[in-house]
Amino acid sequence: MESNTIFNISNDATFEKHAFHIFRHQFENNRTYRSFCDLLYVHPSDVKKIEEIPFLPIQFFKSHKIVSNQKNIQEVFTSSGTTGNNTSKHLVTDISLYEKSFQKGFEYFYGAIEQYVVLALLPNYLERKGSSLVYMVNDLIKRSKSVESGFYLDNIEELTKKLIRLDNEGKKVLLIGVSFALLDLVETTQFQLKNTIIMETGGMKGRRKEIIRAELHQQLRKGFGVNEVHSEYGMTELLSQGYSNGKGIFKSPPWMKILTRDTEDALTIQPYGKSGGINIIDLANINSCAFIATQDLGKVYEDNTFEVIGRFDHSDIRGCNLMIF
Image (tube, rainbow, N blue to C red):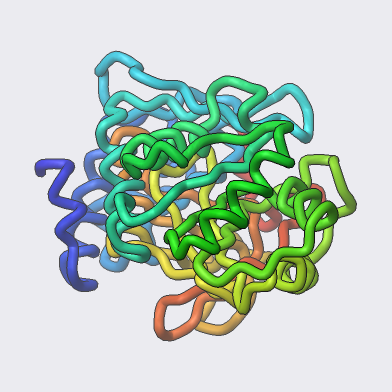
């Protein structure tokens, strides 16, 4: 199967066909994932529904080499390591898949990136190497083809002036930033923006007290003078992103699917509307692992939108004792 065909998925049947194919491929070619499936006594010949595919606990990206081919590693994306020095490592053997995924994903929800001036407020991410978020935003900045686009670290005054000027000129602006930096910005200036999308990527990173998304968005809406605050949902271990255009309700692109599992029984998938641990099928992860059990809690609704409502206590996935082998 040509890996790029996943970006042509248009219905559930095609998604499932690709998911089963990738599951068999990773079962046969990913030693870590194969061992995990063997411990669960799950073989591809026994799997009839995508809900029955084993989801690899995300912690394995911290302790194991998660790859599904023998190709050279082109990029290594690492997590920020806020919970210690043991960081996740996503070994990417085909960076073009990541580029195509985030480019097509953004276009799917927001249209051509060339329409926007992209302003990025990602200070803590810019200060370290290996950030998949910085890689994505840097590419979007380049593809925006606007001389006004760029990253901002400590030059908040320059960003403020540019943001107000561009918005007043009627330019379509995307301001994407980590939560604490956006809050810092609105504490210095009261904005009234009419042509700007404010997109938070989460993360206080120890810089501020953690608050729930609803409270964060309330403060940002008031500070920027906008009706809604958008959000990006992504992580080091994924090559695709979900987006929300307000109220914390996310959508995923056609090659990505969200499920939730029982918090007490990690192998049981929850029905729509019931909170549980978030499982992700990211078909762009064909060369690592496409089936991941995250440490986030959420709900999935019948229209396939989803909500992120928190994280497991102590980042613990309960109900599965097969974490280490």
